Amino acid sequence: MFSPAWAAFASLLLPAAVLAQYNLVKEYAGQSFFDDWTFYNHFDNLTNGNVNFLGATDAFDDKLAFINEAGNAIMKVDNSSTLKFNQNRNSIRISTKDQFTVGSVWIADIRHVPYGCSVWGAFWSSAPTWPLGGEIDTFEAVNQDYYSHMGLHTNPGCTHSSDAVQSSKLINSTDCSVQANGNQGCIVSNPTPSSYGADFALTGGGVYVTEFAIDGISIWYFNRSSIPSVLQGNVSSINTQQLGIPVANWPADDCAINQFFQPQELVFDITLCGDYAGASSVFFETCTGVCYDDWVLGDPSHYDTAYFEVSYVRVYGQPGELTVLQGSSGRRSAEVQTVAALFLFALGSLYAFAQFL
Ligand SMILES: *[C@@H]1O[C@H](CO)[C@@H](O)[C@H](O)[C@H]1NC(C)=O
Ligand SMILES: *[C@@H]1O[C@H](CO)[C@@H](O)[C@H](O)[C@H]1NC(C)=O
Ligand SMILES: *[C@@H]1O[C@H](CO)[C@@H](O)[C@H](O)[C@H]1NC(C)=O
Ligand SMILES: *[C@@H]1O[C@H](CO)[C@@H](O)[C@H](O)[C@H]1NC(C)=O
Ligand SMILES: *[C@@H]1O[C@H](CO)[C@@H](O)[C@H](O)[C@H]1NC(C)=O
Image (cartoon, rainbow, N blue to C red):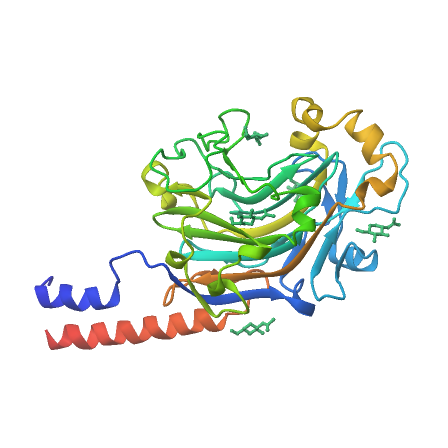
C-alpha cells in the first residue's frame, strides 16, 4: 500500500516545514467590531473582582461598550455611578464566539489600556476548557504597574525555555503551570517604557502580534512610531518572519504546543481588585488604601482611565488549514468552506490516485 509514489503524492498535500505565512481569516473592526463576541453577563466569578460584567444590551445602553467617533471600540468601567457597600461596579468582559487553532496569529491595534489603582485589564486568550487548553496573555497589567506583561498559563509541564529568542530581558517567572507560584504563569514583561498607563496612551499605544504556532508562541509589540510597513493598513496576509525578533517567545521544546494548548477564544476584560490586582502583596506595590472600600466604592472618576480603545483585532490563519472554529452562530466561514472543498478535492484525488496504483 505505502509506496514511494504514494509518499511523494502525500508530501504535495502536507507541507513539512512550519510556515510563517498567514492570511486574514477574521476581522473585528469599525461599526461591526462587537458583532461576534459574547458579553459575559455575570458578576466576576472567575477572578473574584468587584465588578458585574454586563450583557451586550446593558453594555451598549449604558455606553460601557461603543464605537467612538474615531471608529475605535471602547470597553470601559462605569465611571459615573456612586456605589453602596456590597455593590459591584459595572464593567466589560467579552470573548470571541469563534475559536482559533494552532496555526493562527492575532493582531490587536490598541490605543488606550485601562489603568489606575484597583484596575486589572487584560487582552488574552483561553481555551474553553481551562487550564487543560491553555491561556495566552498578550497584554496584562494592574494598578499603577510600570510595565505591562505577557505570559502563559497551562497544566504542569510547560516552561519558558532558556532557548527562547526574544528581545525582553525582563523574565519574571518561567513555570507556566497554574499549580506553580500561585498561578503566576510564565511571565515576560514588556520592556518598552510606554507599555502601560498614561505613557501608553500619550504615545498612541501600539500593535500587538501574537503567533500561536506549533513550534512555539511568540508576541511582538510595536509602539505607534515603530509599526513596520508590513503591518500598516488593512493587510490581507502577514509573514511573521518579517517582524524581527519578538519581545517574548516560548519555544515548543519546553512546552509542546499541541499538548498544552487547544483552540483559543480571544478575550478583553477589565475587572477591579480580585485575585491579582487586589492581592495585598500586589496592590501595595503601587497603591494605598483598601482596594474595594477606597477605590471601587470611592469617587467614580477614579475610573476615567479604566478603558480599552481598540482600532482593530485581526486574526490570520495558515493557508489551507482549518484555523477558525465557528462559535455559537453556527455559520461556516468562507475559509472553512474553502478548506472543506480542498479536503474533498484532495480525498477525491487520493481515491483516483489509489485506483491508478
Ligand atoms: C460563573 O457563572 C456562570 C453563570 O451563572 C456559570 O455558568 C459558571 O459556571 C460560573 N463559573 C464559575 C467558575 O463559578
Ligand atoms: C517583573 O519584573 C519587573 C522588573 O524587575 C518588575 O518591575 C515587575 O513588577 C515584575 N512584574 C511582575 C508581574 O511580576
Ligand atoms: C518606540 O519604539 C522604538 C523602537 O523600539 C523605541 O526606540 C522608542 O523609544 C519607543 N518609543 C516610546 C515612546 O516608547
Ligand atoms: C479589511 O480587508 C478585508 C478583506 O481583506 C475586508 O473584508 C474588510 O472589510 C477590510 N476592513 C476595513 C476596516 O477596511
Ligand atoms: C468617564 O471617563 C471618560 C473618559 O474615559 C470621560 O470622557 C467622561 O467624562 C467620564 N465620565 C464622567 C461622568 O466623569
